[in-house]
Length: 116
Image (tube, rainbow, N blue to C red; front, top):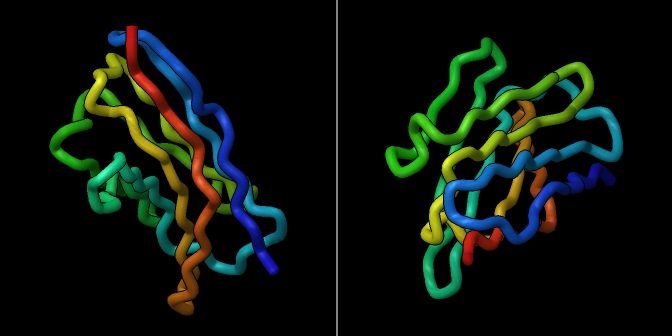
């Protein structure tokens, strides 16, 4: 069974940066979409950024210009570079990979806390 493992979360001061990584434990055939979601306490999970297999990307309005998603389909890895972090970015961040067959794979999440 494929598992996704996130890393790179932690505590950072406002204005700081973090880089999240997500790797699959086994090869996922034909990944169509790589994405990052986040869920803050008391809030619903929301899409932060997505990368389509052709290379196009999509960002939530709240992170546009500050976050960058990148990935390598062949290596089954996806990254999220987060700059100019704000306290409202505090959340549990999850990666997700979707295969061309429509199968979704989720990670367990990595905590990002932005605070003085």
